[in-house]
Amino acid sequence: MSLSSKTIPELKTMCKEKNLKGVSGKSKADLIALLEASSVPPSLPQTSTVLSLDALLNTVSQGDCISSMKSMPANSIDMVCTDPPYFLDGLGDDWNPTALEKKGSSAVIGNLPKGMKFDRNQARKFREFYTKVSVEVFRILKPGGAFLSFSSPRLYHAMATAVEEAGFEIRDMLGWIYTQSQVKAFSQDHIIEKDKTLTAEQKQALKQVCRNWKTPQLKPAIEPICLAVKPIEGRYIDTFQAYGTGLLNTSDETKVGDGYFPSNILTADPVEETLDKVFLVPKPTKVEKGEYNTHLSVKPVNLISHLIKLFTKDSAIVLDPFLGSGTTAVACKHSNRKYIGIEINQEYVKIAEKRLKDA
Ligand SMILES: C[S@@+](CC[C@H](N)C(=O)[O-])C[C@H]1O[C@@H](n2cnc3c(N)ncnc32)[C@H](O)[C@@H]1O
Image (cartoon, rainbow, N blue to C red):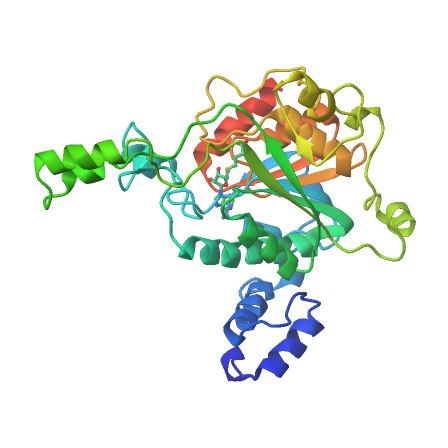
């Protein structure tokens, strides 16, 4: 019987049987989407396609992460640290560097700079996509394993909801703060200029009135990171003993600034003396991005190394399902953790492999 012929209570019971959380108050369509996202397609029977993890350790594979994760064993990964497509315009699950380049050297998409077009559907599409990702991540993470996902301030809420719906406990929102960024707000001059209903004098007058008024976008200075954990089994100490997960590493290697306890605000580069004292993560010791790296959204290696050390022990297995140019894998190599990287785009896979050779 298809899911659409079921009643809401029946769908809720099915969600409960699959241990899917956050079902209360959900519409029928949302419950169906949740169940569909959690089910393995018949063409990919789990038992016959699950691979041994050994073959994937310290490798970067090209492919779609949702189907790739389906072939990984349950409860096998210590941490997932990732920076998925943000689902702002041009940067969705159809992320395509060639198409982005074609949009012009001024990085303009549909007359607006990348990531600026406002579309209410972006949040819904992102939530649907990230629920599918999170359901797979939930299955393969060990109990107590951390799931960290970077996001944009505008669509963070959709990400956090998707992660929670997949069964995770949201524990915090970390904020990576930075000072180097472009102002996105733009003036109305070009809109006024194109307005055929206005005379030249009227245009001039209107431009003068609006000269200090721009689209409602503050200069970006923070990137939220959703910190979620797969529920522990028993007590924290039980999970830590059984799986090596569930607790936070507070040793010297995770101290920030002048030896401070790690906080939920992070800076990867010096910002200002007082802030640096309490928020600055340790500097990398080796080559950072790689001159050949053409990826649009490369994260600082020291930031990722810090996150990995916070939530995993030495030699732990860290998966990045949206590896991009390989930052998480490079950070794992620097931090003595094992990595598994998945990236859909062959060009970025090659960059990641080159960076790993240099790391
Ligand atoms: C924000 S970028 C990650 C950048 C990375 N943090 C770095 O430092 O290079 C997101 C990446 O996800 C990849 N991607 C998009 N959809 C994917 C999918 N379904 N499976 C695997 N990778 C995907 C994109 O090609 C893109 O490189």
